Image (cartoon, rainbow, N blue to C red; front, side, top):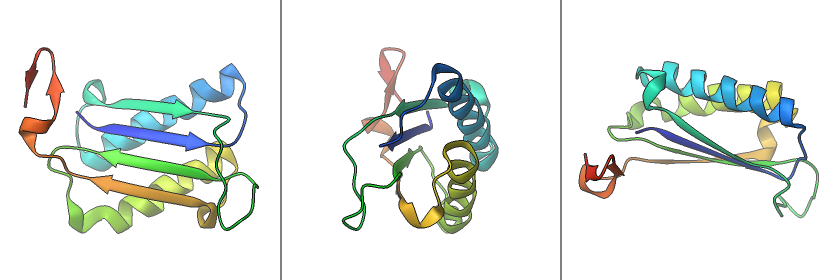
Length: 114
């Protein structure tokens, strides 16, 4: 049920993409204290993104999860930015993150909703 979407204007090799996906999936599972088997990560590279009028590498992340603990978003932001810095070489001041906690009836899986 957790979904982390990563959009970046960087170009990545197939191996780099696999590394980012693997690290991001494990991190989300750890942060949300959920089995990794529930985590989905979507990585979109070579996106048309610009931050502060500057086309240098940047990223937009969206973390969506049922029961997202809103009191932990600052901690999550720090951890996600560190992962982006390590995996994508993008500094934290070039990253925006949107957190969302959808209602259970608005999240579907396996032909039903939660």
